[in-house]
Length: 202
Image 1 (cartoon, rainbow, N blue to C red):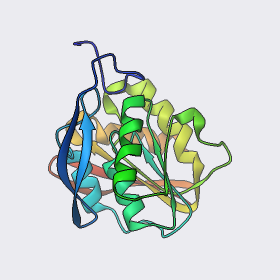
Image 2 (tube, one colour; image 1 turned 135 degrees about the vertical axis):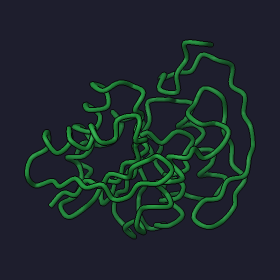
Image 3 (cartoon, helix red, strand yellow; image 1 turned 180 degrees about the vertical axis):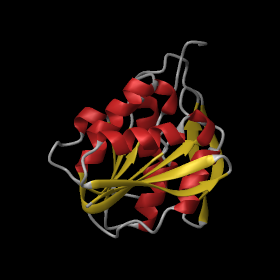
Image 4 (spheres, rainbow, N blue to C red; image 1 turned 90 degrees about the vertical axis):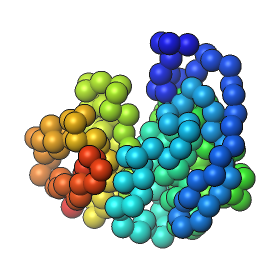
């Protein structure tokens, strides 16, 4: 339906599953996507830029994929850090179902696909990797980051990929102006029209 967005909580279109092959953590896997979610045909360019530009994730602790979609970031975290607990967070129930399906297909038992409100409030994250949902609008996006970035462990980083022409530089300035002095925000890299922004909690 025309008004349906990937950030709808319950897509109303009829579910149409599709299989495709994607390369994650250096290996190719057969995965499942569907309509009514973000980038169902492929790993989108922003996510590719993020996965190619971040350091190896921490080997343990809680790791967060914020706005997980069908799961390329969460699955990569789970494959690279099998002893960590991966939280794949999205508002789209169909996306969460696909993350669970793909994690099971890959034999990954360390992925929790969850609605934001279902993540226990006392959990803190050793890293956050996110291709955040820019198109939800500035206020929604700012609220999302104000909710999750403070849940970084001290000494840990969040890595956000944002398209340059969709406001990466203004988002960078907003974060610098909004968060307290214990945080620093830097532009880690630029590739294919995307910026990777690094948020560090000291």
